[in-house]
Length: 397
Image 1: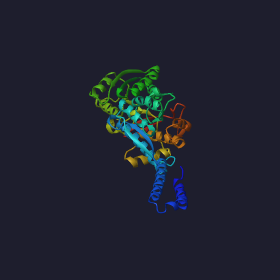
Image 2: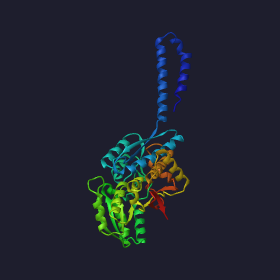
Image 3: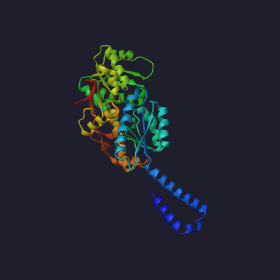
Image 4: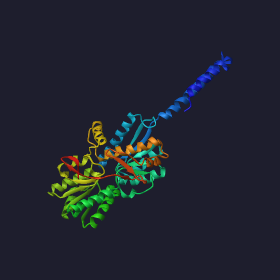
């Protein structure tokens, strides 16, 4: 930036030493000098304002309704990451500001939010948290060329695309395939499945990604029960129909609240059938609403809740101190998504070229090890078998 204050001082000295003699008693001369000085000060202030204005990033997640547990945890993970960076001086000497938006798990709302953030001065977007919302936002962010990095979206429909959409959690085909192998290895050959169609881009994809290897290995899907969360209709009859097919295990493909409520109905019916869920349900809400009914329910997850890695332990402590509750996988992955984005912004703190900057980062430090991104912005990392035990998430070997 030009040193306008120095220029103004030089101008004043020259003006005073030369032309000022002709304006010594001129009111007009005094006014002109005052206007010139004020103009220079305004330019200096404007220049400093541009350099010190915050770098804005959008956060989009479901903050109300049945998926709020996922969205709120993701928001808090991002806020913690931003607060830590700001305390350390920000990026390129500028503080970060988060523009938090509630997608309400609604496609039209999500499209409008993507357009709003792209039309404004947001450098990038963190989110969304569900695959159906991502499907709605995906065309907008590509057309507007604004980078979007999701903590938790796993649908296979986004795999291997050269686009503006990045992810830090493994595509669901990985965990669905691992569950199929695990079930067959433990003699669980007959599954009934419940599918929440409110997030069909995720749940239907998950079902098919599980069905193919499971049936290829000799397993059978004996019943599929589809429902739409939030609509009228009890979950008790749903549980009855699933159990009537006499399955060895149930796979519940829904968010935390509905997974917990279905599990409760299953246990009320006196069944001790094995329960499995997707990572979507692995927030504190599944334990809060499910209680004893979700004990020993298992799922394959992207992060290890029992990790003793020093960065992970520090995050868990800092998060609980800051927000007053234990972070779920959504908070962990949102923090990691923010970390990856900030690594790219250190190279290029503006929207244009940020995609290339993030691809150039290649890998960045996650809470339990490095997160590697391939040339399509999809992650390569380990996954784990988690179980709810004694009211907490644990990891099985």
